[in-house]
Length: 363
Ligand code: PEP
Ligand code: MN
Picture 1 (tube, rainbow, N blue to C red):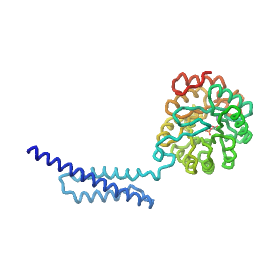
Picture 2: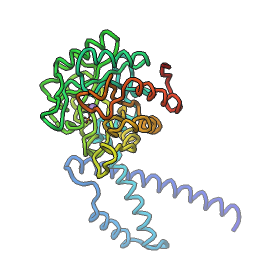
Picture 3: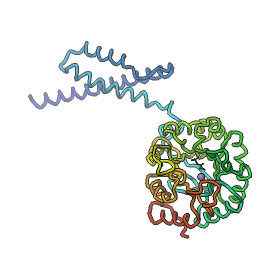
Picture 4: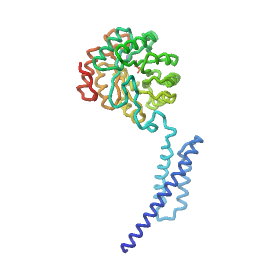
């Protein structure tokens, strides 16, 4: 075979490649149109009966030289790519998904832009007990440059006989301290009726684990402009967590942060099992900032620092931990809150680890 012959055959091959390319894309356009119709009709996109009939059709018309099995294999690949093309349509993607919004959401809490790549901390007592108690914690935080003050005013407690929190009075205390020290307030709201009034006192509305699927509360928090911190439910899957987040964003409030706080497993060594892998999964699947609550996940003071290191190392945007002037007499969570000395050691430990990238004020 002469070189000219080879060149001309190669030219022909190039033309055939282009013809196949054109046909494959023509097929893709048809598939997309079919996908649109199926979506409108609410029909499942994958249709094995239809695939079988197309493969049979191909077999019937195959005149070689390719074996029918080879051709069916090639066409199966085309079918698969086409199905993916139909699924790529992101009109149905969740608002909180990366698919819908590739860039990170940052949540502005009094100038602290959570999710901007700089890690942050949220500290404060489990429950607001008095003005003096909150002020003492806030002053200690302020010394270390920490501005995100969290405290429970409405406490969802397992037992109705346990301290239920100071309610609105607690929110007023938090706001008073935050105003005095230029800090931001994060506090849990447990009922839709309190959301509106809470916006006057808090900079972030926390929705606790027990309320992650309180859909009326999610909708109410989604209807205001105040940022929201949504905690993962006690036994919620990541998928359920993401859908709970969608309730809030779909109502118009996109200033939302997620918080991994441990889930219930059979393990009894810790209060909950910190699902650390949920952090990168949530960061991949959604564009929302992700926080890790080391206090309620571990329930153990000795695990706060290692858990916080893990959270920072795996990419959490913020870490939350509880601090109390005298944990032994705290009205809730006395076993895992840090006293001031432990709080300072906690921050020092993180500085030493090199995992915390922004400067923390030295004690
Ligand atoms: C809290 O953060 O105060 C709290 C009660 O935690 P959780 O809702 O995660 O149990
Ligand atoms: Mn607590």
